[in-house]
Length: 531
Figure 1: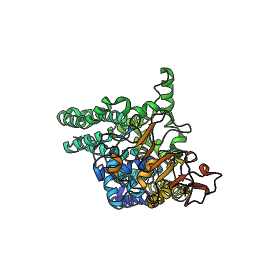
Figure 2: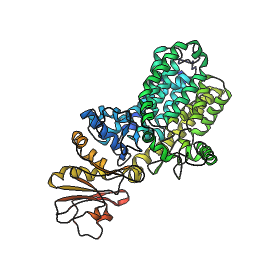
Figure 3: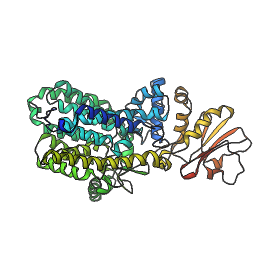
Figure 4: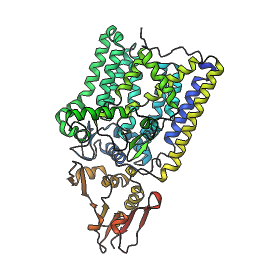
């Protein structure tokens, strides 16, 4: 008999809520917060988002990525030396790009959809670990989580990691008594490793913890667990083979940011400091982690008391569910701690495997507080006060994110390219050459994305690239497009079109065809012609 019961008794639930009704409301709220104004918040568009979107467009049209590789295990997006990234998000984006077009919304939709589904899966996971009321509390907390809302609106590889992680755990926990769920869990755990690179360390560590926590079930059902392990290994083999045969390039980005170049004593100290920084109050409840030059809040301060209670329960109790949560807590910073942090704070991307751990711990603490309350009136008071504090925190975050943040976007979202390049796409037929400023991160990908550049043409034509000292590609030209400093190529009497930063045309008498405003009233781009 499994020690994980997905239908734990919950005697207080009928007095506090109707489970199904609350779950529907939570999912509706989660969907609303992840889908409303998806094309405008975050404002601008990141080069990694554009890369995933355009590769999805290429898969849709040709079955190959933009470099001509057929259904690759990794995508060499911006370099074949240091940028072998996960293709999972690009594959997931194919249906939405087909349905909504090559747009911000179409590219971000998979993150928003799977983010909403993850809230529902968190209810199932929480119900299995904590009971029905704990599952609802965890789902509600994740629905309004600032970290998860941000990631669910960002078309980047780590954005879908929580979906695969929670889905795998749901199946594996049910798999202690069901072979079908066990095999599904093994398959999802394997797919998890194809996502963001941190999962390639975290995934095996968590699976090992799962095997230790449920060692009795593993011993009783050796054959079923052996088949599941074989399936997991079989599905991971393509990734393992590519990593082994192209190790230097597949691991190129990690080698750039890892701490292993330091002497061993310093490496140990750096790892310890990095590891502990993920538990710092400033990271968890203060400014948060860094994404694209801006801070992303991780959790709301009112969650702190119930998280501490939940953590104490995990330490105090010897239940398998609590032991698994504690192992998860200890494991989530491991991979991120092997890399140099940002100057100001840890990354908010590399510890992505912590979603929805903090919500589950808070839900466990919430459940414990309600269970200790001496009477129903006290239970309602505790629940009401916590809900009010969290609702206020969530309201201020959402209001800031949707109405204030768009006026001050993070620099990494490269605001203004959409307006400039959609105009260029409409008029470029009137010009012999189009020159795009290189005062941006990988500007060529925005030309491909906003111009919906024909994938077959890009896959077969000559693309002139050079390697930067860092190992990244700098695309200099393809087709009629050229990329560089506009100051060195501007010719006033040619049939050329230019997309420039204002400082590149300073001192020249020009009449812009289009001026693209940027944050704070500044000019982001000028579109001018040479005639």
